[in-house]
Image (cartoon, rainbow, N blue to C red; front, side, top):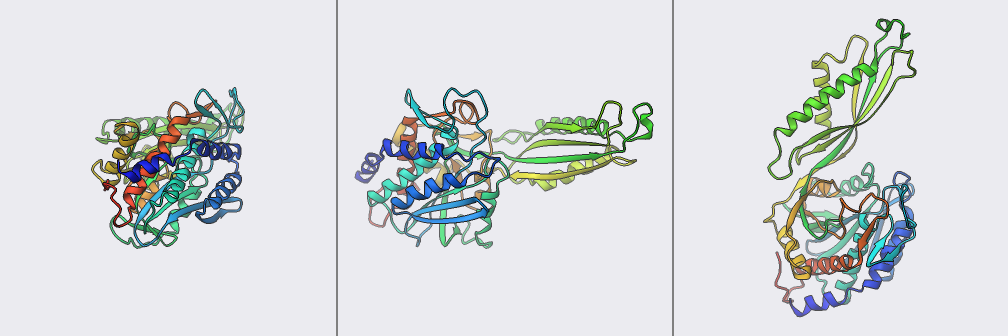
Length: 414
């Protein structure tokens, strides 16, 4: 490491990270619920005290996106992505889900892992860059967005504000700042995630005709038609399993809920299914919905008094960044410099990074503190305090290499 690298590592204050992460946890932000405003207030207050540039955009009333930035804006810089909402606390907790507490070297609370800890680590890394004079003519920004856990209102608004014409093949502009690299600070246990499948939620509404159960032929049973659709989806899922992506695996179908009918002695006149479809990069949820409608028609499920509609209620695109891309190799090396080699992987979850890669054209990885499969969305959610600090050190080192001031020797990572 260079002298500047060592200076940055020493500038990461664990107490400062814990204080900010705890305040963000205490602020809540359960979604559904539209309650991210308090989280953004905490983040804005802290970043204002640090002297960051702050931009707040109210996506819908009471649900603001916030972008905080340091450094110049003459050159393409680094964009960190996070979200201010958390899933509902639910039951089964032995601690207060919205009363952050540290026990046995771990920070507990809803969102500690996903992803208030990651947000705090990014902010403290940015503060270290500023304090150590490691900022140049390129920006380092954190975009903290609403509604990631539900329908993606925040990320859609964020990418929608970007110019429609790309500045260069790997650089896009947001709020007059250009970015050439993006890191999504979601929990990856500090493994550099170079790709993930996307996700889509489809709502399938089946309408039939009610009749007395004593003579069901007088009606058209929507539940029976829905059951045939479930069988059809299962067959489509089997076909996907036979053609997996070489890196990300197969796309999948899953029927999540089915609700229909009015009473046992009545022919059901309506039924609604909600379906999860995991997407490979390049797949479009609306095209998939259209194909499903065609398959339903071809199977003879609709018609003769049965009507079927298929709508997309949520879409989050997947992405895949080459392991040889600059952002991938840079992230792997920064992690190795701080905690040793952790390598790369792909994710079973989805995240806002797919929008950044698809709609803004910025090479993207996911990298952050915490273990998503072991901690996120569960009672007694927690994250290692040591890993919070290590993540901040990684972020500071990575951003300093990418945005190095002319004349500063940084052994640039690319």
